[in-house]
Length: 336
Image 1 (tube, rainbow, N blue to C red):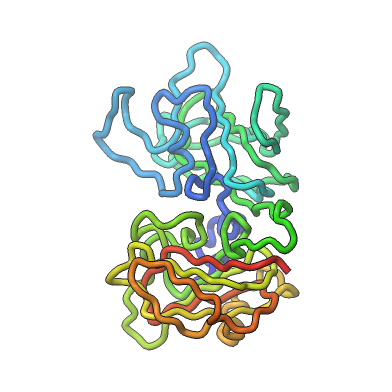
Image 2 (cartoon, one colour):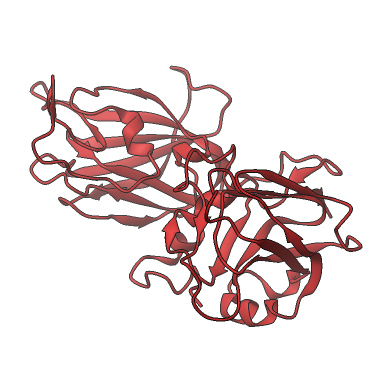
């Protein structure tokens, strides 16, 4: 049973459990850069892993999958401004220079601000001091700031390229009004995937992303099950709340959608977030929130009347029978 905490043990825990607030797929935006001669800033925020395509060139030179500035000849350094997908507290960073070998940025620094709009008068706070970078590698840095931020300014010294910037954190929920219906499972509201039976295809993190999937790779898909049982996923809600409406979207899944789905739920607020192994075992015995329901290909399925008597919960177990692919899961309700 793969849990997020056990996957990739060489990667810091903040990068395995935090939400990437710099994800373009979640709504992060590239606002400005001092230079984008070789590769545009927006490429640095892509959710896909960086790639290297030998022999691919454009009018500026070698095509690179990331942000790359031209060689500086007059002193100074380059920087870029991005807007996070949601205001939030930052746990740590991955400044990824993969495939940048003789053209990587040798050092970086990160500043942050909390504002509606970045202007020339915006005041910035340093949240990551100057740190060295190397070629073709991940660089994980913990963030010691406990404040909530909306925008970042990445400085690179003096120039060069960064393949991806990941900003792992927790979205800020203070903006949600009491009693307002929200998607309690949405990544932008703090929903997180803790464990799953299998995630052979696609990107399972996109299950909680905004919008509908763009193709079969934009969602959670398991391998073909050749043994008894069914596949499942355990999620932590962004806030303790009462689930009143569920949407299961099988967009683009036609010959491989699940036959049925069901949900279980529990109020685990006293156990915290870290006991994922214990939660997985316990989740098999959680109360049923949604009994088994038939699913169909490439469609949004809404369930309201089918739900059991609502009560406050913090975690859910999403079961698909027996296997297959789901593009998006929405758990609409009100924070308790």
